Length: 271
Image 1 (cartoon, rainbow, N blue to C red):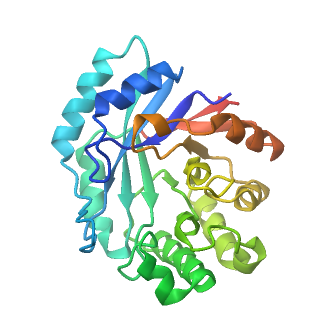
Image 2 (image 1 turned 90 degrees about the horizontal axis):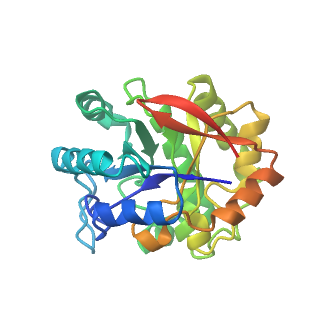
């Protein structure tokens, strides 16, 4: 089974209202052994209709997490993480943060393409589904080929953009994007970086996690070994979302283990 959730947000992230302690309590109730909080940090996030800026109070977050880490230590392992919204020119700023705080785990992710979040309807109105998803993958490739990029541990929700396409993922055909996806996966593997299996695809109605099982299968075929698992929950009731379904999917793909990070070091966990 899966006893960790390594992608979680609380009210320290602008798009969550859940107190951090409520997330920790829920993790214990679910029988999780390890959970890693990965609050958002997205520098230069554009103005938007919801007024979200995705700037993080790093010191307040760290202080509260370490207070709870000590308080709940006998019950559950609590790890200190962050989700960095990457763009090529932000590498130096994120490197300062990565070295200033004792993170266990850093997720690199793409939330913006040419200044627009695929979450916004405007994105697909402008580009359409297939071209929009291709541009999203190209943005990931640009991020990981930037020489000055921050040293993240895994790339999160590799096909995040499909969650918000008008057709969800019904238009997705792996072969349409294999060339760019292969380049992304090969480069991540060469750099000893992993990818995330993000269960929120189930919550979004995709019927599969992010990324799509075809991408997970291809990652494994290419020799990828580092897979972290998280729900991307922003409220307690979404933690460990559809983990039983996810567990069965991973077994069907002949994936027999996953990874957690402590002090930026990978630790393999058997499914």
